[in-house]
Length: 130
Length: 224
Image (cartoon, rainbow over all chains, first blue to last red):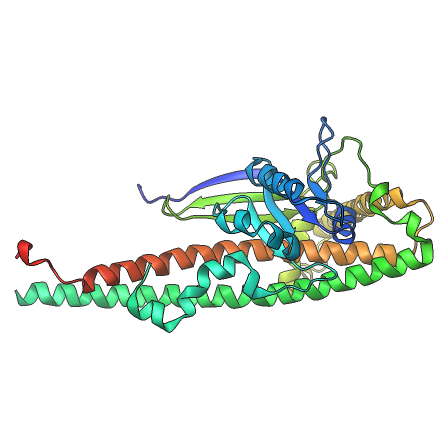
């Protein structure tokens, strides 16, 4: 019975977002917006005035909050804090890089795909590196 | 000696088959991940387009981030997480979307159930044919469909409530944008599941490669 799978369930976790205005407005219309009693939101609208520090702080906050299951981040915003996004490796919350209106999705920049892409290289498999 | 060699050979074969399965699973999930992201891109594009058309017809001042509700409220749509500790080392979380969870208890999972039913459209039809003429069952079904209508009504209300921040008279394109973003959310949850499947199979493949590497390493002469 030692190998028996344990299932932990969290009934209602939030989806957090760090993205451009239109994406956030659209997703809020779909019902994911949450504002707690301290007026803390589960989203950050990134525009030309948003500093990298603000994005970093929001990412750190959302990726450590226990009530958040998925963090959506526009890929061009993720590129601004690439070092943070790449170093994140926990299963929950799941960080998903999404396209934005002016910047289409580029798989070569996706942190998850860059983590696993070395398996597609024949040399690395043959030499059994890492 | 021979028996030992045979056992090692069998072990290697088993390991190779398991390894191949993991590699296949990994490649499948990577492919699905990319396909889903492609589908997400087109759904979001449609949503942005509808939003832009609505903004054009209603005016930029009526659709922007400044109108967002900053009063305390809970999310109407959330995610349920089931974390399966298969190996304790490889936790593979499973996400499922709970749309319009604010709708009264007992009706909460309606959207999830509906999604499940949609996957097997023939099932409901065959059930109806099999039990045609059974009055008790038809009554149950009428009450069931009544409850579904009620839930549908509630969902429409929830949708309208979320759009009310943009005023009472809104462009139909705004409603279309709302539906596009709802679809995008469903795709995003599928992507999250695919991501966790991909990472889990990747870990297994990597472990397998490490095993193979250990097996291929020459035994130091001191141990002989």
